[in-house]
Length: 353
Ligand code: KG4
Ligand code: ZN
Image (cartoon, rainbow, N blue to C red):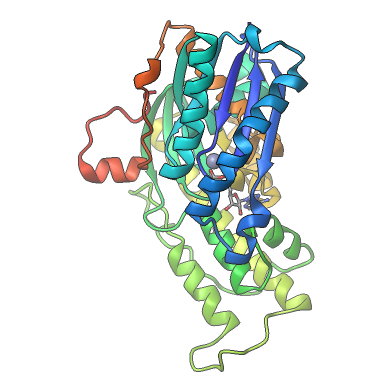
């Protein structure tokens, strides 16, 4: 009997039905991109309200497409951390209601661990642990040492903006719209990635596994509108736009690549798993594949639709269900990031649930 997974951590409302063999019977994602585009970023209150409207239709559609009856659902899984608190609560409330009505177990799962579990969906048991995990998304850019699907030790990551956030802000500076990643990727086609010298902060630091993207964004802003230039300076077009987009994208890729290499060296791992929306980026995928060939390590990259937010990756919850876990109706959301947990001195293990 399959599980129903629900995902509402940020601005996608998603549900999926996955059987015990990790076969995805259905996966439905309702994007809110058009609602947030005019603000060029996710507005938490708008996101929560949209989740409320969409969650039940999305779950119904996932069950319908899976071809199973509602009463065949063995358990309900829900992403409970990290994310926007209002968004998370909508998914949790729906999950609790369904679990209570069907009288089945409910288990929470970590959205970041689930991004990496997308590799398991695509490559099955061939994904070997321990491995290094890279999650690069709109809210997170972190490196992990994974000893298993649920055992993540955070090695480092961004100290300011997430990579996806940097893409979104760069797209806004270049007048491209939201979400920025795919638009920058398209604008960069035909551009020269070496046309502009942009900073790669912390790359030279061979001790720390930290990354930083805020200086890169500022450097791009000054290229687009030099200090002292009038506020109405026209947005770049044509070859200049392509060169700026390509140079920005290359700086992000180089920064990530340097730290992935360092993480592989520090841990001695022979396998790299990646996930998150930025993992859909062709330049990053290509660079990591080349790294794999150069270093003779296995690089697991999910297909693009499993990189951006979805509920199929909630298959991770099977790992908890198979060991008999059931969080019950006490389950709560944990919106904070690993970084904020570390700042609070939170003793909670980095991933559980
Ligand atoms: O994983 P995700 O869907 O949501 C979060 O958990 O944050 O990631 C969304 C982020 C956005 O910032 C978006 O601009 C970025 O992933 N993204 C990309 C690409 N597709 C999505 N960034 C670069 N290149 C892409 N092709
Ligand atoms: Zn995500």
